[in-house]
Length: 307
Image (cartoon, rainbow, N blue to C red):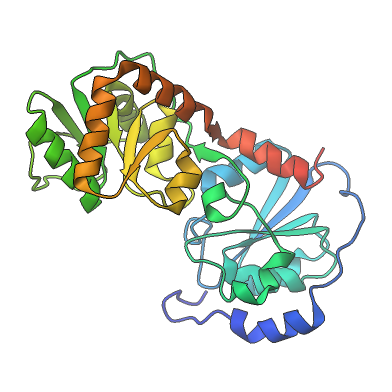
């Protein structure tokens, strides 16, 4: 398969054809009995769903929800003819998916790149299977390891994840204001040169989840992609502070403090540290906003006409 760094997707060259002729007509036939036949067509240059930025956990959950999942490379897209549901794995595969014959339903699962030339209207032919901040309607999903654990939260522990400069500057300012706090950091290579003393957590998702369940407030990197760390923290019941933005507002709602500067972030952390009732309210709302992959997969399969 062609290398993704040297391959130019065909989308711009096929747009004129798609806009003038439209996609192949959708069949109104029912699902062909038994499991839903779901085909994922990967974008050019992607060898696996992970390379296309798609969550493997959701594809596995589709199968548990009653779908027979087949993954095809972009050049094999015609082999998806007559499938119940064909999904473009990344926007660069969307043009090919629109041309496949006899498909009952078509959709796209966005990867890392936005829809090219969406303003021309061609993307309106495709439903978007994605969380709200990526243009879809799905809830936030968290991997199985991230859930509330029966661990006593320590009021003196702050957990910062990732190498985002804003998050590290917030942690540094809080450490200066509240020297009695214990800071935990994860999601970065160690040893790390940090402007504050911290305990490093290196390990598997269950180990990080235990650390999320131990802390009283979390500092999360910006919301991006299918599985932002902020949603994993919410799933663990951890009240969080993260960078403000449209994606964060759609993903977090009022379950998190959204900030733009280190000073704002430190103020938000201190507010949560000092207000037990606010922390409890944020924790409950955060958990309620995150679903497991099986619930999300069942919603998609049911909407596509599965049993």
